[in-house]
Length: 211
Image (spheres, rainbow, N blue to C red):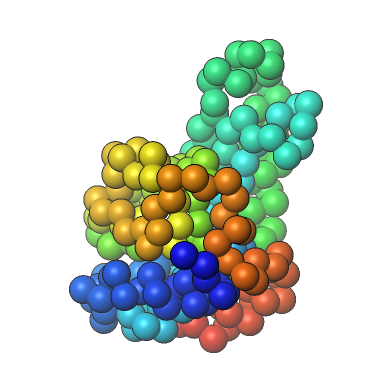
């Protein structure tokens, strides 16, 4: 399956979630930046508010592109214990980089003009433009659960088939349009997978009702 854009993927994904249309105490939560156009399209179809939630990876001290953990904007951190041990990464390094990422996420939230929502008792439909390793989505689901979400639904256009059982451990429900047995890169499932700029995210958020 190939999607033209993230918005098209969001509209198709919404068809798997029609039982949540106009549902009370329910909101869509997108992981910026790639998840925002997916979430905005879902919000339009399902008549639900759109929220954002930030998660950032903690990079290896030897390669900024290689993640050895992640931290949510609520301060929940998870690390790859095997990678940390193998690379000899100190606790001081992990805490320092986590603080840096927390500061960056606070700046982005201020830029986007969306204060953090209260999730207590809410049904949260958590989305992104796709899942590769699953680390960000798993951490986000756990963080939202700890923030009091009554139900967490993970809904994405594409994800590795082997991750589905793992996602189901942290979510009450998992909806995936295309579970792939050979997911090399999420971008391969989109004709247009451009890097979103902040201005595009701001425009989408301005057009979509907040919680």
